[in-house]
Length: 251
Image (tube, rainbow, N blue to C red):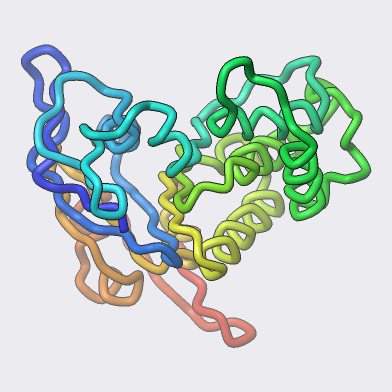
C-alpha cells in the first residue's frame, strides 16, 4: 500500500500541495486529474521522493520514504515521466535499463535481467521491434517501449505522468487497457491523465486536485453523480452505455 499523509510541497514561498492524504492499494488503477498547474506532476515527484521542500510523509508498504534509499524507492515504484525522448538505443537495450535499480556496482547485466527484459518486450507486443532504434519508431511504440522498461523493474507500483500525451485515440485506448490489466494482475498503478472521459472510463478510482488541495477521491460513478467534476473543470459530462460498457463524454 502507498500511504500519503498530510503531504505539503512548496516552490519558494508558494504552496503547491496542501496536506494531501490518500492511500492506494496494489491491484488498483488510480487516476489523478486536475486543471493545469494544479500540482499533479508535483505530487508524483513528491511521492517518489524526488522533490525538496516537502513535509508530511509517504509510506511504501508501511515503511517511510524517509527511511529508504533512492535505489530502494526505485525498486518499489517504477516511474514513466511525461516526456520520453527518442534515441539510438534499441528497444531491447532501452527495456533492459529497467533492471538498473536491481544492479549493484559494477552494473553488469545478468542473464536473468536479459530474460526479464525479453519477457516485458513480449508482454507489450514489441518482439518484432526488439532490435529497432527508438528514433525509428512512432510515438505510440516509443511509449509502449517506455512502459516495458518500467515493467522490467518488477516493482509493485507504477506511476505515470500523462502517458497518453501525443498518442492517437487508438494508441491511448490500448495503453489504458494495458494499465488496467496490470493493475488487475496485482500492480498498483497511479497515472496522471488530462482526458476526463478516458479517466472516468478506465479508472477504478479518481483523485481530483484543485487549488493545492485533494478535493475528491472516489469511483468514477460516484464522482459523476456528485457533480464535482463539473464544479472543478467547468464542463458538462454525460454518459451512455455501449456494448455493455459505460462511456463518458463532454457535452
